[in-house]
Length: 118
Image 1 (cartoon, one colour):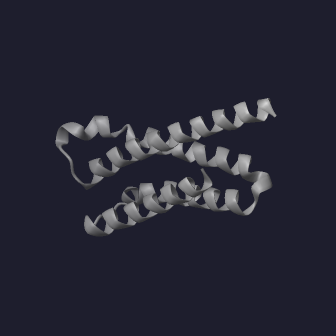
Image 2: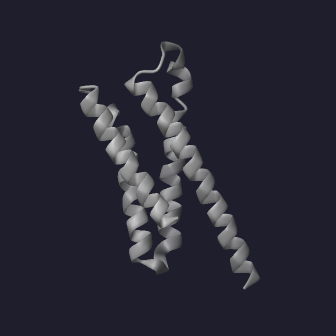
């Protein structure tokens, strides 16, 4: 999961930067995916570098994954306007955040079951 977290964080950072540049947006909110990607990237790297604190870093990461999914729910409020850069970013946050959070929960459950069987 730390490698997936690093990948998701990197993707969100790049997505936010590219969409902001391509759309020529002057709004800080166009960088919202990047703002959520930074703590994910840091958490993924720290979980790999400091294995004894992996549980802490992965819980921090899943919090930002959930925030990504929740931030993406705004897509449902603006989807009637059609898909543009902003709504596309919201949809991407919803999908990526939801899938990432699901994978984290599955990973946490797997770890808990293996912890009890040892």
